[in-house]
Image (cartoon, rainbow, N blue to C red):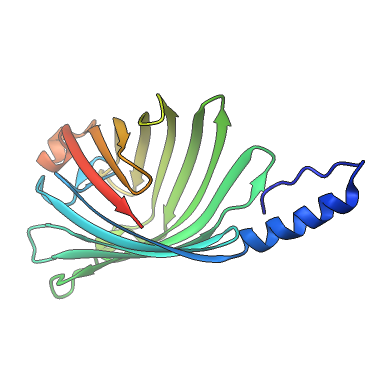
Length: 229
């Protein structure tokens, strides 16, 4: 629930307002999104072999709880054609800090026989407003990464700040820790532009410290557009 300030001089009025706010916050709501980008980047790695992406999703919220699903094309050069995600979580608040506790399942369509690409992650995140900016940190943990590669943990610190009512800047630095030699660090920095309350653009630079892993890890600039309704 959103915090409510109740005046000691008007307690009855405050209680009435609190009840109204609770009723509004606990209303079940659903939102849809659809978009496209010049490349599907996930933690600094192209999931479409540096080609275009089309995606869509739906989010259900009830108070501090949320759940949703998301779908995108992918290209792993093995026949896999699409990624479909399911996720759910809870966003409690402690003072100015908002936490995000959740779980995500990553599934894949048309994957080759015997390929264990699907996996799930647990998520623990927190964000804090600092002036006009918002600073955050998040950890994702998977007990079994794709292709039975073992435990994996992703750590990230991020931040965003509006420039005006249309433009904003945001960025993040993260590290993917996987059992074996597949560890890498990634970072991104971008500018967002809000057309209206439903449509927004994002222009972002992505990079990693492991270009020797292949071109999907190389630096790239990605332009995306997303519509919500």
